[in-house]
Length: 76
Image 1 (cartoon, one colour):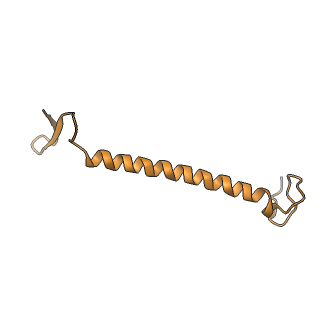
Image 2: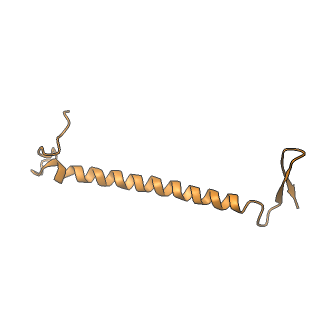
Image 3: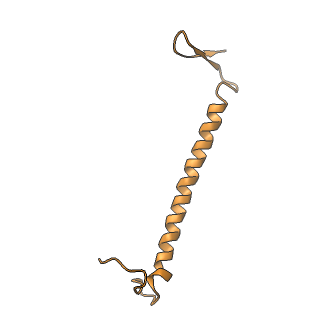
């Protein structure tokens, strides 16, 4: 199928130009997808920052870095 130009008649049969009809719908769906993905990335980033910054806090065991062993140890 040939590519529809912006000033050609819309293939949906509305009689309007493509740029005033279906092209707008395609742009809106692309924008919505971009916002959804961006929101998911932002949420994951915030969760990662919160978990990293609260490392060692809370009800679980505290973790302490051991330079001698080169890894973390759980301290009650």
